[in-house]
Image (tube, rainbow, N blue to C red; front, side):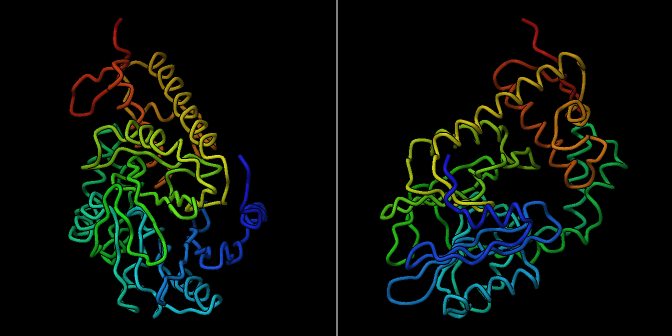
Length: 349
């Protein structure tokens, strides 16, 4: 792999926000901060459109700091929110979709995403916050969490209030569809896994690949089971990695961290990471048969000691463990006991 976003990587290493960068005469990257999050910022991409106006790929987390970063980034290239004609959204997560509603209200721009994530956004915006909390707690309990710990990790309804302000898209893009950005040939590539409707965008004229959270240069994106989500999200993700591996883009422009070249090498590394993780999980099940996903997560290797995991970080770890269990089950390597809170053992040979 070759790092092409050297200013982005330097800023990352210095724990600072990278600069707005002009990547081509008609394309810029604008970092929008994520509050209290180790990812630090989202790369928003700004396109100059033929005939006038601007297009956005993702928008950033909804916050005053995020809005300031976005509007100041637009101003730095001679534009404003009023110039935005359309917003492409790679996926439904708040750090990518959060500011889309405010952008649309200020500019009249359309907002487009994949139908699967659009359906999820409609459900989220129509669900009472407390009902969403109750559903997530119940899901964690089914994964083996003690109810009180699940309640503490999910937190109160106020933590989910922002979801009611998310933009329900007014345009849909399926696999192979082209975005309505005049002067660009942005082809949507459906890459489920991180979310059911995650989209990458292959720019056919320049060879650029906007990879969202599907392929990042340093970390593996979270792939988790969710309430009402895919039955086998990790299988979806690995299939999606294979689908983009041989695109051979001139450069990969991700949603976080820094730009790079070497997509095939990076997808191979991500695939190998998950295979190692599956092997580690099999070992944990062998040593602790009859365990729940909540129990098994504590026996896996994480970026810090398990005792330091709590709240959203622990939820992501447990639901990611469950996603790996589902893939092992679909491969016929483990079996659940079928109980209300399933426990897992190796499938007898």
